[in-house]
Length: 146
Image 1 (spheres, rainbow, N blue to C red):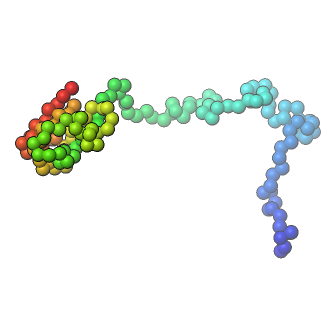
Image 2: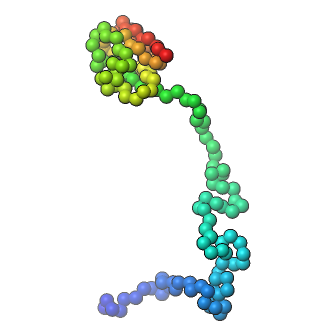
Image 3: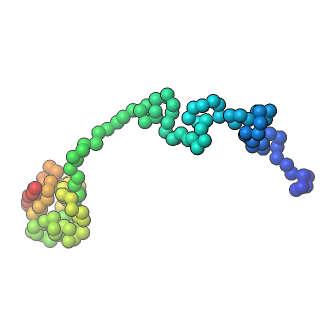
């Protein structure tokens, strides 16, 4: 076999549809678009999500969950993060912001992950029960400010 003898397999190449070339071509008159209707017009196209009379996909799939419209968002600080400060210090949100623990202007919540090795007084907008227990166990204080 030579390179000049190569050709595609039988039936693998399809002739393009030449529409509007007379009735005897099989694609004359309406050019395979049928009579009237949305898609028979020139420039007509359907959006991908339209499914005719079928129930749309977005309505077929089950709905799950709930997003509360006025959800309170917090920046999270863990108890282990308080080890960066000095013993006996009063840790405020402004001090945390200076040290790079919190960045945005959202309220701060203290959570109880990790171990605390120093006694500090903490001012936060919210705190979990375990976080308060861990801070008070070591001799510190948690003050929840609004």
